[in-house]
Image (tube, rainbow, N blue to C red; front, top):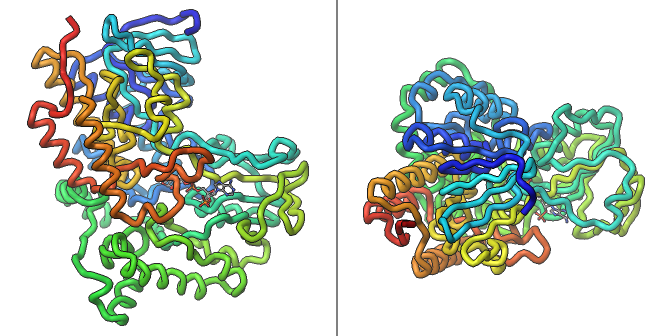
Length: 540
Ligand code: NA7
């Protein structure tokens, strides 16, 4: 550990000032009267929405549900401008929340936590930062996001490129000027799919390097008016109540219709309606069995393929865009605006790198097995070391100085995605083993923040100051998470949910797929039973 320059003691250290860190700080201060410090690597709040500033960056959750529900006045006074919130607007919202509740002074910006070691002699965490802080805390709470550790693949010659190159997850604040440039985008996940249509409009020429064709549903983004906002706000209590007990944290009406018992005509009508509506409603409000039954799923997958063929003019390009190697929804479904239409532009070209693999990056562009693509700018839309990557960037050590990285070497092991045995008083907001990325994040974040703060309050009332899951409870939870995942279609795709995008990462399904509502009920039962599954103790 490095020499100290800033030393102090607090009740809690929170890592990250995105949705999670901001709300956690508020609860610690206002509900528990605790002293807390938040460390944030960026120079402002926002988390994901601070870093991901690429063109077209937008959330796929509808704006009226991509926010906090903990304060009714806040909900009533904020006005979203469109169906989906764009990155600058989400950032503005989080800045507003931070200032409205006067949280900024307790956040250390431009400060990255480098280490956190649990000291068994006093049951406290010693947290270190890259700014020389050494801070002792009773509780360590991570709000580090699930998809925040960007990955740029190790393509030979990567560093020899003399043009500009960017990863979508750490985009320059001043933006990138694509005008008159030959641009290459590697990756067609959410970030690629959102940025490609916007870059295509500016660039002289755009080459998209696609590894896996994906299923997309149109966003049908539009601005919203006063009447729409008033209607949402008048029904907010009911909307949130539905979302909190739903499968994925959205207030959509789930039907119990089966795609298999519907006739072909009924299916087409339902899918066309969902397609027109756009977004995740295509999944929620058509046939729920498309997410669980392969035969039902095949009908939706084929419908989407037919739409791709319909939109893309060039049949060869359309063929390359057709997803066939995994079922719809087994990877994170993508919501697009003019993505397929973009391939009808004269300045856009698609390279299928499964058939034409990238050989190397040269000083002037990308060389595939079939030829050279000269480029001025390369955009890596290549995703993240999800769920565990950000934990492993820090040297977190629990009892017996065991590094978290070692404990999780074969995949993350947690109790409820909130805690991990051997790391007492460490809590993870939307950690692996919780619904997190399979849900509308703010709904899951609020539930976790409230669970943690209620638990700390209950411990205090009962005279406990150390909490750690018992090994059996953790083992049972991990088994349950795996068991539930095995029954889903998620395990049929190579996705970042399973760590498949990172060479060498163990193939383990990391989020909890049992659903937001059931998960919440389970957490409530555990809390009502005095935080069953945790060993609660007293230091003295
Ligand atoms: P994603 O969804 O992980 O997408 C990354 C894309 O990059 C995807 O198309 C990958 O192909 C591709 N990729 C990754 N590594 C390589 C290499 N080595 N060569 C070529 N192509 C590669 O990340 P996003 O940033 O788009 O989205 C992350 C999440 O943010 C998203 O799911 C939403 O929750 C919001 P692959 O499919 O792995 O074959």
